[in-house]
Amino acid sequence: MRWEPLRVSDAAGWADAVAEAEQVDRTGEHYDADDLARELQDPHLDLANATLGAWDGGRLAAAGVLRTNDSPVPVHRVFFDGVVHPAYRRQGLGRQLLDWALKTTPAVAGARHPGAPCELHAEVSDANDGKQALFAGAGFAPQRWFFAMRRPLSGELPQVSVPAGYRIERFDPDRHVEAARLVRNAAFADHWGFSERAADTWRHWITGTPAFRPGLSYVATADHPAPADGGLAAILLAHHYQADTQATGRSEAWITVVGTRREHRRRGLAGALLAATLRQAQLDGFALAGLGVDADSPTGALGLYRSAGFAVEHRFARYVRPF
Image (cartoon, rainbow, N blue to C red; front, side, top):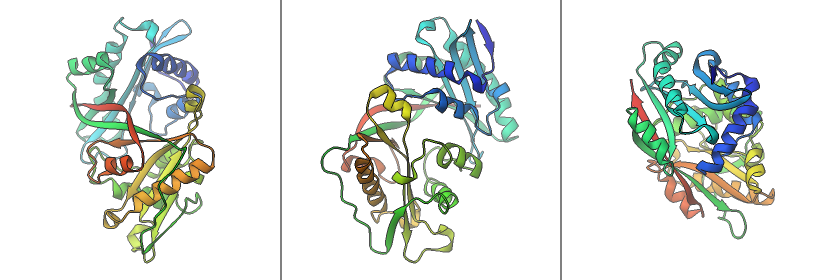
């Protein structure tokens, strides 16, 4: 087995390993080579020091990536994502990847935010007993649970009911990119695991990716907005991933971000934005809509999504180890 850092040109091999793993793990997540190439092009990813692949000849048997956060406040959360091709499991590769991550995290974190305390985070499916045991044996503990939820877009959908004093409009890439980032940072500041998004990573991961769908994304504006709002009170941003359609045969509108500034909460803005996106996705021919949610979101988001017809399909635990 040959161990070396990943390169952008390794995206196809990584995608193959991920696709084979999904046949076994059934997490409901799918990625193609273009998706993973973009992940490897993250402007803050140190390919030489924060990625590792295990190669058996020309096949990628295992891969791991460490992602730093834009902000170290209150703590620098580094995320570990690893996969082992099913043909190479039960050979210790997963443990080797995790050992590498534990050894490497302090240096990778320190290079981005010197002197800041850090934690290593990983998401593990509730259905993957082996992965849970691997992380628990390495000193990790589950600290939070997240749900992947979906609903079909056939039949009746929620009505778009815009609260008095607000208006809803389609996301405009020429006007709303930075204002939406500020709303996201303000809306999630009181959520568990929050970290501010910087402008460059916001564009790379959210509004600048080919998967972003401005036509399915909406913003809410108060009739008399405060200057700090940047003109926006709430946002909903959606994406569509071709890899999901190719793997499942169903086209899905993925709702990536739903956020309302705290001073505008409890007025029905999130529900109105959600209804607008669901209706547009139905008109555009999507078969279903999906989203991820913190099971204990302080905004009561889980209840909102259930009332809009979403049901939990997959559960993930966030495993954390402090340094």
